[in-house]
Length: 265
Length: 273
Ligand SMILES: Nc1ncnc2c1ncn2[C@@H]1O[C@H](COP(=O)(O)OP(=O)(O)OP(=O)(O)O)[C@@H](O)[C@H]1O
Ligand SMILES: [Mg+2]
Image (tube, rainbow over all chains, first blue to last red; front, side, top):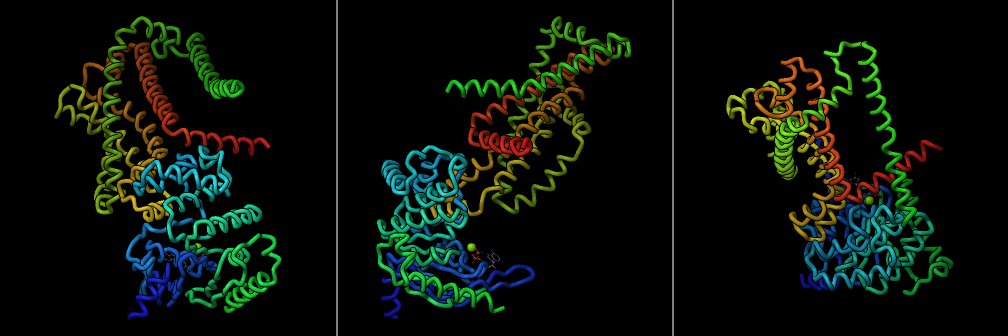
């Protein structure tokens, strides 16, 4: 019991023996089976796994948008029982309001929370500057490129300085080059804010470049196949990191794991 | 800036010349039919006679036009407000949705011209029965389009809203309702043209004023020029109300108009290549 309490106070996210079953009229799908993951405060954890294995489901559990069928999820020392407001969420599609400018889309976060508007405005400008959106504050979403839209979504998720950031394939719709730029930016933002990040991605390179740890899930029902500690320096220059032998071995290992997983049936 | 304005002026010309040409062609054909004597003048009056009558009897027609417009707008506004309220209730409550749908559908399929006499019996010859028929005509498209609009919101957007903790009211005001506006406007545009029909149908059934009454009287007197003039004025009322809504939509939803414009341009570019 006492060790439990100690664990919850030291983890930012604690997924404890969680299973999720989806019931429909005809079938019952087990998406996640007895998964346990611990994420330390300030840690960057990537989650990779075959398509449809339950990665999005996992993030929805942490945010409280979905309830586990069994097991418990603890976020910042408090058990998750419904939608949590102390997180930031970024989806694969930017999900912007098309009638609002970039800046006002970011400020939606503040309006919904009833934050002080002057302070929120300052924070928004700071994030716009940090993510290189300056000059596009007043552009409508359809006037922005996919990468810019995703930056707006990231700013919106960071506006209230959440201690935990959940990202579900945030760069999946971007071209390779923009994606690299976004990776570099996300890395810098993470270093500057010290936020705990859970990132779901299909890109093995992205998962390794950004993370302290990469969690590899198996095919559905998802269980944790392996956890890879990324042995790279904290400060990561993009091309220098790509060239490191540790990077190559980590990505090769994950590719092997995923290949083995999908080759099972 | 100046080139922008010139561009938009050219756009207006581009958009209006085709319909204008078609209208002119129709008038020309109408004129030809009457001057060549293909059709007897007492059956189809010439455009010159019709428009001459319009000018002569302008003050007489104006009074009746005002009555019909009043009934139409009142019916349309009531239908719009009620329709949106019912749609919101239906989207937020499954029970209300399943209860209201059959009634709505029933009210929609029942021929308005067949129940209009009943309202005259109940409410007399005043403007009330006409407004009620206009409401009945206009209500359904508003409800259907608003429900569609409110349901069209991205589930991810709603999930995000849940993590932002604004509660249902803020989510509705800031996300759901604005997202439904393009659909709502589409419904309102259909509704306003139906409201005109509703008001005229109401007047047919029993009245002593309004454009429906004018047409009925003209019909009784075999006064085809007046009949044609009445028809033209009714159409003008409908078109004008429609254009007003179109303008309101452009002013209120510039983001939507520009996006639609962009989509059309790309389609045209693709078709042209
Ligand atoms: N609401 C739901 N109802 C029923 N089944 C669901 C629901 N949500 C997800 N599932 C099922 O759970 C499984 C995991 O879904 P999830 O979206 O978490 O996968 P994923 O790993 O994010 O996939 P991808 O990489 O393609 O995004 C899938 O098989 C899916 O069909
Ligand atoms: Mg997913």
